[in-house]
Image (cartoon, rainbow, N blue to C red; front, side, top):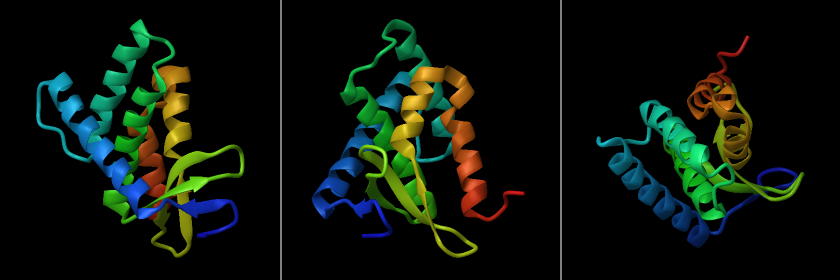
Length: 142
């Protein structure tokens, strides 16, 4: 256990999320018509893909939400050397536990952010979330 209410995923479940993220990366690349990496540019494309889907299906199926969550989580996990976790303080929610440059650990709430993005549109942009959380992890928040 990383801290109270936060539990690491088993290696099999973490590997499954990596595989789901890879499927998301491939689908996002096909949808966007370009090669996609696990980076901030891809999150801008993911925002657009989510917007496209939500226009026709305001409540995307859980499988689609897991696809988006896995991709967002992998961007953080790879960039900040994080680990997949489940936070159980307010229901179970997938997150990525990342080390902070100033010391300590921070759970990036990827599943909750994807839900907010679906509900609130671009006001809860994943690309902006990545910038804000990255600044926090690097200790650049005023």
